[in-house]
Length: 77
Image 1 (tube, rainbow, N blue to C red):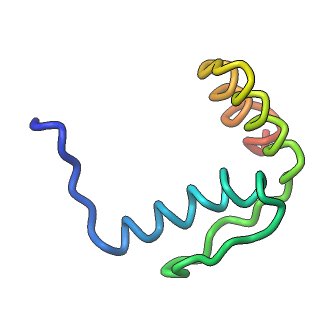
Image 2: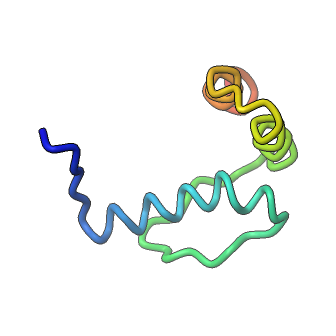
């Protein structure tokens, strides 16, 4: 593999929409423009998500941030 991952335009738009929904929007406190190829998942815990992202900015702890986002309340467990 050459390290290059090819995406279709639709995949790129969906990935961008998801990333901005989960990272940028909680930090800004409002919903930014989306391409709306597919409806993004509803983010119900913006406050918790924002706290997790701000903690990551301070600590740069990838493992703790990944766990916070994928296990427990933020992940819907």
